[in-house]
Structures are given as C-alpha cells and as structure tokens.
Length: 121
Figure 1: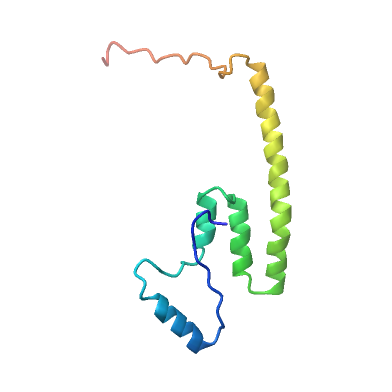
Figure 2: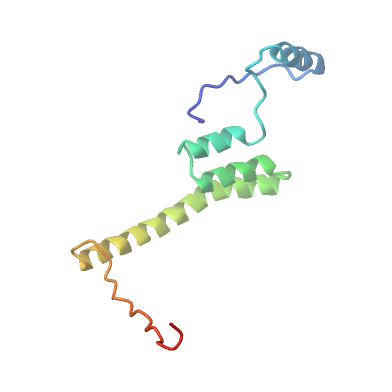
C-alpha cells in the first residue's frame, strides 16, 4: 500500500497488553508509531493511489455515522468513474488538437511590442 517497508502489529486491545507492547517497542531507537494518515500520504506520494482515492480513505476513516460511512464507500466507486470519464474526454480533446497542429507546437501569434514614447525615454 505504501511502497515502504513497514511493520504492522495486531495485538489484543486490553490496556495492559497494549501498554506492554508499546513500552517494549519504545526502546528501539529507529521505531516510532505512524502518524494519523501517514500510510495514506506515503501511498499517494509513491503513486500507489491518486488524490481522489486518498480523499475517499480520509472520508471513510473520519466517518462517525453509518450514513457517512456509506457515503464514503459510495464515493469510492462513483468519484473515480466520473473522473475517469472526464479524463478520457480531456484526453480525446487534446489528441484532436494535436492532429490539428501537425508540428505539435501551439499556434501562437506574435504579440505586438509596445512602442517606446520618445518623450518618456
């Protein structure tokens, strides 16, 4: 998911067990708990997910009600499909424009330069 080497631990959620595990791990100098959203940020930065997918994950994690959870899950399928359609349309338009300009360069007209006023020069 992140394209990095990580260690994910699943332990019993009792306070004593959790405290003991965290206390033991805290003695390893290069080890630290992940920040909230850190794995998602790494996945985005490495190109494993795009921005819309990262936002869907955030919405899902932040959901406090069942309605919010369902909306986040729905947007996980609806948003990418809508964006894919828009990107495809944009790609087709750009392709058509490239065929209209065989040189591959934009058709830019020369911009007239301002004449220098001899009185102010």
